[in-house]
Each structure stands twice: as C-alpha cells, then as structure tokens.
Image (tube, rainbow, N blue to C red; front, side):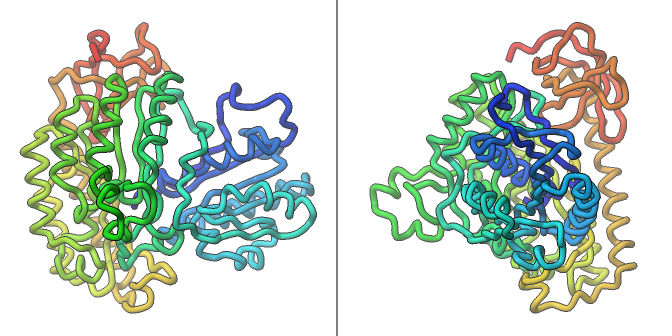
Amino acid sequence: MDKVIDESIQGNSLELQNKKENKRKLYIESYGCAMNFSDSEIVASILTKEGFNTTQNLEEADLVLVNTCSIREKAELTVRKRLEKFNSVKKHRPHMKVGVLGCMAERLKSQLLEEEKIVDMVVGPDAYKDLPNLIKEVDAGRDAVNVVLSKEETYGDIAPIRLQTNGVSALVSITRGCDNMCTFCVVPFTRGRERSRDPQSILEEVNDLAQKGYKEITLLGQNVDSYLWYGGGLKKDFEKASDMQKATAVDFSQLLASVAESQPKMRIRFSTSNPQDMTLDVIHTMAKYDNICNHIHLPVQSGSDRILKKMNRLHTIAEYHTLIDSIRKIIPNCAISQDIISGFPTETEEDHQDTLTTLKYVKYNFGYMYLYSERPGTMAERKLEDDVPHEIKQKRLAEIIALQRTHCALRTKEHVGHTEEVLIEGSSKKSDAHWMGRNQQNTVVVFPKENYKIGEFVNVKIEDCTSATLLGNATGYSTN
C-alpha cells in the first residue's frame, strides 16, 4: 500500500460511540496509508473498553496517540513536528500522556523515547491489544514499549470504532504484513510477514456495516491479491497445509465474490494490488458483479525493467502492459491508478524515459508520484547508493507529474455527456450548495444538492469537468 496521506484523524467518532461512564479523553491522529487509518479505528475500539472516549479537541485530551508512517522521510518529519505541538499542549496538561503507534514506532523503537522526551509509549502495529497494559505502565510513571511483530494477529475479533466517518464509507482490513520485499520498502520490517484474516470475520464486519447504513466498503491490505485463507497461518506455509485445507482455501477473487454477493446493494472497493500477484480471476470477478467498483490501483513504480529488477519487483514492463491490456479488454471502463518513484538509485535518463513511455501507454486516471526516499534498513539503503542528484530527481518527477496531469484531464473528459451513478459522501469543499460524491471509477463528482441526501445513490448527468473533478446535475435516484 504505497499511497501516503499526510493528514490526520482527529478523533471524530460518532457521539453514539462514546460511553457516558468513560471519563478519560483520547485524541488520535493518523498518517500514511489507509491501513493506518483502519488501525486507528481498532485502537479506539480497544481503548473505549478501557475508559476512554475519543475527542476532536487536543487541549482536553488525557491520552494523545499518533499513528505513524515510515514509508517516506517526509511522513516521519511531519510526525516529529506534531510531537512539538503536543509538547506545547502538555505544558498546560502535565498529566497528558503521549504515545507513538504504527510503522515509525516499529522502526525506531526505544529511540523515540530517547529523542522525543514528550513520548511516553511506543507501540508497534501488532501490539495494540497490549495497550491496556502499556497505559498502566505510563500511568505509573514508567515508559512503555511493545513493538513485537506477530505471525498471527489480524485483529479480526475486534469491531473497529469508525473514526473518520461520514456514515457512508468504511475500511475493512483483510490482510496484514507483506512478503514481497521490494528493496525500497520498509513495510515487511514494520508490519511483518503476510497473513490473511478469516473470511467469515470479514463477512461479519461487512454485514454489520450494511446494517448500520454504510453504502461502501474498501477491502484493505498491503497486497490484497495475496489474500489466501486456508485455516490460519502465513501464506508462505501454504504448501505445508493439509489436502483438506488446500481444497477449501479462499483466495482474493473468491473473497471478493463472497463480499459482493453478501451485500449486493453495497459498493465494494479494494486496495492495494501488486502486478505480480493480480490474476485474471480477480478481473473477471470485478466484471461479474456490478457492485464491485471499476477502479484498480496498480502501482508500477518504474517503467524500466532494469530498475524494476533492482527494486525486486517481480514483473517486467511487458507483463505489466499485458495485465493492463487484459483489464481494458475485460472491463473497458475500468479506471487505473499508479504509484511511481522518481530517482531510484542508478536511474538513468533512459530509465526515466521508459517510465514516461509506460505513462503514455496506460494513460492512468490518476496517480501518486514521489521522489525516491532512502529508508533505513531496506535492501536499497544497504546495497545501493542513493546516487541520483536531488535536482535531477525533481526534474524527472516534474515531468512525470505534468504528463500525468495531462492524462488525468483526458480521462476526466471521457465522462462528459454520460449519466453516471454517484454515491453522495458530503458537501462540496467549495460550495455548501453542492454535494460531492464519487462514481464507480473513484472520480469526484460535484452537483447541486436539491433534495438529495448523504448516502444516497444518484444518477448524475456529467456536463463539464476540471482536470480532476466532474460537474453535473442529478437526474434522479439510481435503481441500485
């Protein structure tokens, strides 16, 4: 899951999720990928049972937790700046405790306690069930650390409290960890080995969300296409499973079909896919069920075979293009988005031009593009010199972004003149008289509110667009 989101969850759970008997206040922020946001909801659920209610007001918090990302240096720097802000608040609330959660906690461990004097607690992604014990330690005046990685933990038995919620869309975690060992990525070191969650617990969570009125869910994993449930255990141990376990195993395409069938009126999304693991079965399943959204986030990282090999990406560009061709053939109106790293070690101008060639071949609907950021402990950091000058990285990234913007505008214009189903998520950021929602392809659509409401499926005639947003008028309710 390569997308990095530098924004926060500020404890904005629904009031009904808070308990009157709880006396302590929890303020939680999350940075990074969607998995971190999902994890924060698990943390809030665990701490609600320990006497905490969530709050949006930092100044009234008794416990402040920041759920961190280590995938890029910028994300870690953002967290350190936030810790400075927490320190200024703590001067007025000396009893307030501060904890660092997530990937940055796992990577830096006790170093955070030494460098950031405000930090009382450091907790890795697999240790959230130990939070009650860790909080007792910090309440007693002692620092607390638990960053032990698990081979089994999936939090499948915990019902998350929906924090950053509009009551319409929700995140559902299906796998944890990653086995792919891309040389630039810290995820295998901070989140551990890949393991899948019991499909029954996934279906129960989805059904519960439907009963609560949610209209859309996103199935989450570092690599959803690697999902494989055969009764428990790591994916790498599947060959040791019994014949019965193998015969009844559930892969991602089967899970996707089960979720779609269990709630045919609910939209289904998923993220993130890996080109080396995505199968045609998944694409055919998407085509079969109308409620599975026509959008695939398919990180390419580079258009150069040489660079892909150094990244330990186990696919070639020819194979990637073939997969794209299959998606276009089976789901002609499927949106495809990307992740691209500019300036990976040893990248030449020819490698960069290969990346631009892939951009021109696919013409992605949108993407997430970054400068290469050397992450301590990764194979790239240990084996490869970060030898592309910063100004060259920036120049190449600017060219990638400019080309992607052109393709964004091209893909957005393709919707003009069509009537499309939109799920209303909330008010437009620019106009309180307009709703904002998304179509199946995950493109933002803005239209006048009239008498429609949040959470409704509406048909919208697309009449105009910006480079990234569709503009139109509702023509009535969708029959979905």
